[in-house]
Length: 437
Image (cartoon, rainbow, N blue to C red; front, side, top):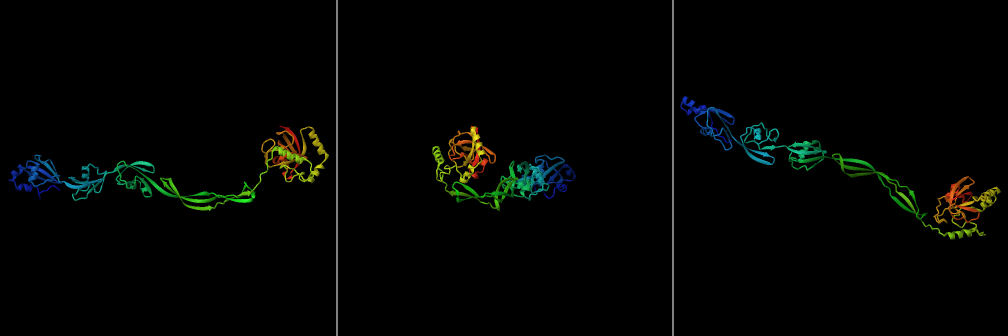
């Protein structure tokens, strides 16, 4: 306190220095209020300053006197003296020493320009201010933009750091694993933008296929260039456990933490042939024709009795079969003669061939196409070939020459032969009819 007040200022003290009742009434009646303590007195002093000096009231540099010391005294004047106290006030990171005549801490806050209801302090605003009291810590709220789970809102906070802000404004997220931007130890300032995200860990289990391997084996029992599947491959199944990191419910990353094979894969075994296969010679059309002519000449040798071209199947017509053919009823021959007389067809023995080779038409022979060879019919002629034994027919196109074996008029492709008969027989009796080109 700056003010020093004598032990007593009162009417009794003033009367001792005067000259009786007359002197008493000649003095000016005033009131003096020192720090809330009010006393009445009468004085011959002319001004407030003289009164305070003559009556031992010492006023410090920071004390307040009202009215001013030069103010003339008159009857009823009230002199107020407020002694100042030095207090330390901390606002944010700055600490000041302030002289104040405030009666309460709330009055002090008002002097400093703060609304006691809108600031946070370490003292009770209603408490009487003491010179020996604690340092006063004044905290003002700041406005920040806080985004929680993608939703932005504006909040006022007394928090000093971002982490304190999150604990204050989003306690449900702060209680678990979370992520802030900026970092949690960043100081909170006016209009700071802060975002906080909830971080979760979750395990998920999914089934995945295990591809099978292909194992190759070699075999001398299979032609070179060919392959067969000995054991069919089967995919396996495994359970994969992944740990996912979710930020605000969305998967940010994942990593495999466990794998469990449920079914092992079965390797596929493929056998590849190594047996050498000699490619057949590809004679020219002229040489093939010569070969057929030679085969058509009579011969006593066993080799002359068999077809010399590649069209003759392994189970071709045998000698007994030919004898039986010669013994067929004459009616069949008469039917054949009748068909020939029209110039539109005939009846004969047909064979088949299957090995790839050039044809007289220039196209590559295809055993799966409906074609046939004839010695004289124009290339491109279409025939209907019928098996009298079962009544089945097939339409073929002449694209090659032959056969040059006696008693045979047609050499059918394997597909054409199989359409009306059994290829296991090698040859069969057929009736053919020219349809045109």
